[in-house]
Length: 321
Ligand code: ADP
Ligand code: TRP
Image 1: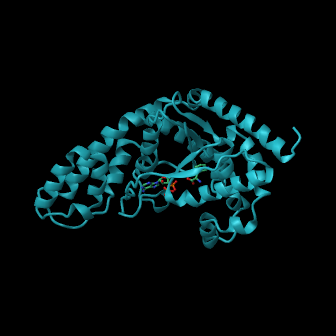
Image 2: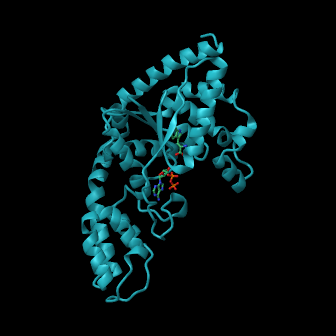
Image 3: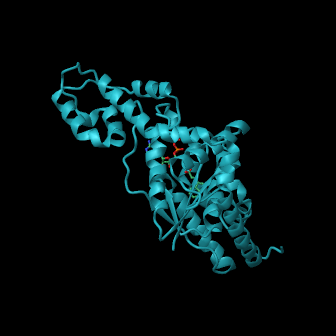
């Protein structure tokens, strides 16, 4: 049985890109009975960019609620908060004493952050150490991540090798698990949907807000009656995700010019509501207290694995406890 583990950074509201890019693939992994799935909220990682107490708390609760409302099942998967397992900080420290500055300076995420802003915080530099500790303290085998995170998993493997050579074989070398290529979900302006581009369709919103988001999708200018190329239409790209059964019919109508942008958007809004209003209702019905109760079992499980493994790590590295 393989342990599959992934972390989600609670750095903002979730959008359709996150849903189709991360949540749906995780729900599929959860059904693999031969493996076990660990999912945690990387709230300490989020502190490298979020310094607003209310925002960090709200994002953390909201993401937990969205995942549970979408179908992540605390009975099947181990769900917890990074902060439930303070031992990761301890292991990150040990990794920091085995890793050189030049190794960390090669991290793309660090280089990008530094290119944008020279005054980056030490946490941003330290980020890969904490991520390696998240993964290896739980002795995870596989780590589902987007392409941008592959290097961080490689770095985790190097840290494990250094640890095992220095102190004796104990930690497991993790492997990244790259999702089968799900096309990047485009935003309302046609670029990759991303909270940094302000082009998102949120997962949780009122009907009015959804309508506004869909009506803000940029389209061409073909007059009604003219054929539209579905492959270059930003609305059609979302139909492929939200209107799967209607896609052949819509494609036909696009090509023969019997549908306009307005009607296409209206159909999309209906399908968005159909898919996400049950999730939204469930989300709204869960309180912060209830969500913590729901994941109580996962939190306990993560804590007990961490405790057992950190004791061994301390012993191997000469830390008296
Ligand atoms: P954002 O770009 O909005 O800041 P994040 O970087 O927080 O999104 O995304 C978290 C994860 O969600 C990413 O690792 C990526 O796999 C997935 N994701 C984000 N945007 C998209 C998108 N437009 N299409 C597919 N997946 C996405
Ligand atoms: N760095 C990851 C991201 O930005 C989040 C993360 C933190 C993570 N710790 C992890 C992912 C451990 C996988 C495993 O998306």
